[in-house]
Amino acid sequence: PQLPKETWPNGLLTTAGTMDRPLPRSFVFSDEVKQALVQGLPVVALESTIISHGMPYPQNVTVAREVEDILRSQGVAPATIGILEGQIHIGMTAEHLEMLGQLGESCRKVSRRDLASVVSTRQNGATTVSATMLLAHMAGIPLFVTGGIGGVHRGGSETWDVSADLTELGRTPVCVVCAGAKSILDLPLTLEFLESQGVCVAGYGTDDFPAFFTPHSGLPVSVRVDGAETAAALLGAQLQLGINSGIVLAVPIPDKLAAESASIEEATQVAIRECQEHGISGNKVTPYLLKRINEITGGNSLRANIALVKHNASVGAAVAKALHTLRASNAEPSAKL
Picture 1 (cartoon, rainbow, N blue to C red):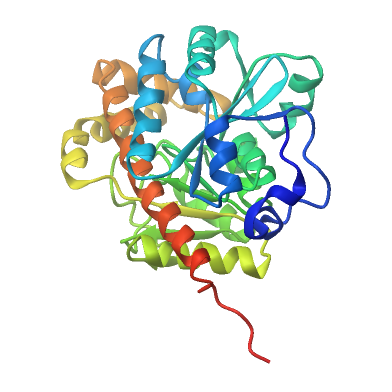
Picture 2 (picture 1 turned 30 degrees about the vertical axis):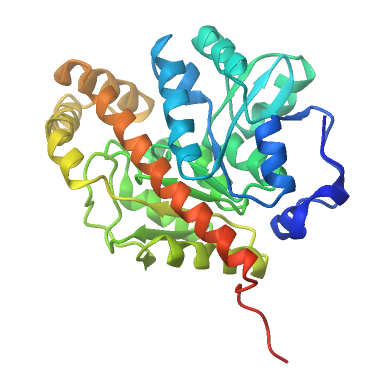
């Protein structure tokens, strides 16, 4: 099911630096994604953990289709990535999404470390940020949309509880469009870790790193990009230079949605204070915070989370189209000797 190397357009995969060898036989491209890649049209990757582990069936499938349709409505092919019976799907049909949604949490949550074991044993797997980044890169897709990235957990200086998302960003040249990281994490340490990994953290129309449900964390980004064209120019230069680390394109939550989500952020801060007051530490911190926030908000955080992912998809589509235009015009920076 893989595409012959010679059919890829304009060095798309060689730009990503992954085509020294053919793709594994376990890769299966949907017709929609295959056609877009062969024709050099914009494609955006999507993760599948949000489908299997993010919400119950059938809401998970409905939301997945809605996010894909946002991309399609802007002329971008959605490439939802997941593993079904050991086959790595780059783009899923409606039937595949339905299957993944029905599997729910019985589907394995797959990070980079789990890929080989899931493929070799022909299991079903939903890809996290780190696995989705890696597989998108292998498939020649340099742009990926999600809700938020993982980070260094509170108490991480003692427990070393650091999300694999951060190390993946340090070694995989994919731009991750997200709303930053949730404030339940240690955001200063998260940004320090990304800096050590050589990851560019770009604020989309902001100098302030967003913290998921709030547009401001009080922490600076490494660079500000104003608009899709500027973001695409940054990504294009990164790929052309052969820099093997990724980019975090941190998109602040829209003002209207931020106002609606203010109670969720307030609940987060309450839960953090309670955690400190009760002396909860180590690997018990994150499970406590997530459970307590859900209790305080009555589960209302899910609706806001969905709206935020959809907003990120719209931004990601605009950047993908701008990158396509940049490449088509041969306007990427080039050396003059």
